[in-house]
Amino acid sequence: MIRPAANQDLDLRLRERARLLELRYGGCDSRGILSAAINEIFDGRIAVVSSFGAESAVLLDLVAQVDPATPVVFLETGKHFPETLAYRDQLVAHLGLSAVRSISPTADDLAWADADGTLWRRNPDLCCRLRKVLPLERGLSGFSAWINGRKRFQGGLRGSIPVFEASQGRIKVNPLAAWDPQRIQQVFRQRGLPAHPLAAEGYLSIGCAPCTFKGNGQAGSRSGRWQGREKTECGIHQGPRAQRSRAP
Image (cartoon, rainbow, N blue to C red; front, side, top):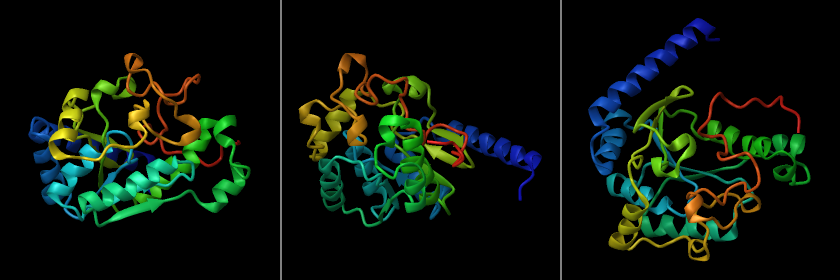
C-alpha cells in the first residue's frame, strides 16, 4: 500500500516528467510527437483511447502511420449508436489497426446501479463513471501513458491543455491539442478518411446515444453532448479516480 506522502511524491515526479516532455516535444508536429511517444519514450507501455467519434479518424490515422499495432482502447459502454460500432469496424479495417480492445462495464457494476439501463437519465455522472471511467482504468492497466484526441478549440476544460500532462498516475499525450476544425477537415480530405455516418446529419461530437444530440457549431463542437445539463465531460479526463461507493 502506497502511503499518502509517497503517493504525493510520485505525483510530483510525474508532473515534472510531463513538464520536461512538454519542453522537449511539445513544439513538434503531431506525427513526430506520436513517433517519439510510441517508439521511444513509452515503447510498449502506451495505448490510444478512442471513441471512434466524429473526429477520431484523424488521430487513428496518424497512429497507424507510426505503428498500426499500437493498442487502441475502445470503451464499449453498451449505449453507443449502431452507426458508431459500424464505423469502428470500418476504420479498423481501413487503417489496418491490429490491436483494438473493447472494454465494457462489469456486470456487477451494472447490476448494482443500472439494472434497468436508465441510469443515464437519473444520474448521468454515475452512468459515465460505471460505463467509461472505471472500464478505462481497467483498460489502461499495465500502461504508463495514453494518447487521446482532445483539442483546445473544443473549449471548456480543454481550452488550455498541453501536449503532455500528468493525470492519475500516467502521462496523457494530446498530440492534436493545437489543431483547429479546418485542419481536421483538410486531413480528412487529403488522406481520404471515411467520415462517421452521423457527422453528415449534424452530429458534431458523438458519444453514447441517449446523451448525444445534434450540435450547434456556434455553441462549440461539443454543444450536442448532455444538452440541458450542467455537464460537459464524461469524467475520463477529470480526476480524481472514480469511487464505486456513490449511490445511484
